[in-house]
Length: 53
Image 1 (cartoon, rainbow, N blue to C red):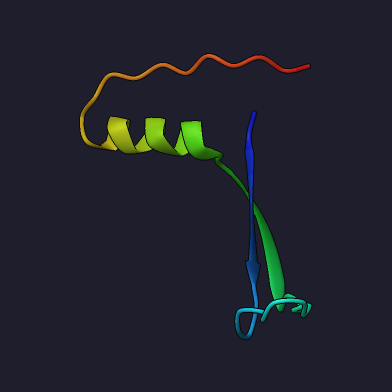
Image 2: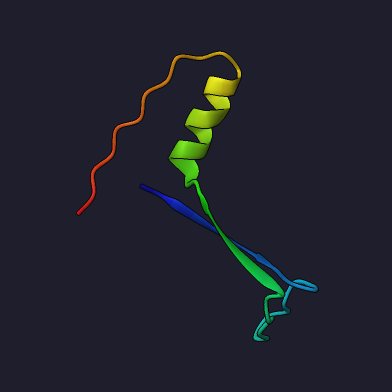
């Protein structure tokens, strides 16, 4: 439902500059689902409802 895109760069780009990624990883995630997973790992009972389209 959600996707986190993680890019590894040598250093943070300065204002107006471009950084080339050494690698890119696409992982399941997104703010809401990350919070739900964290709450579940802490023992909470969680559900997630989403809508596509």
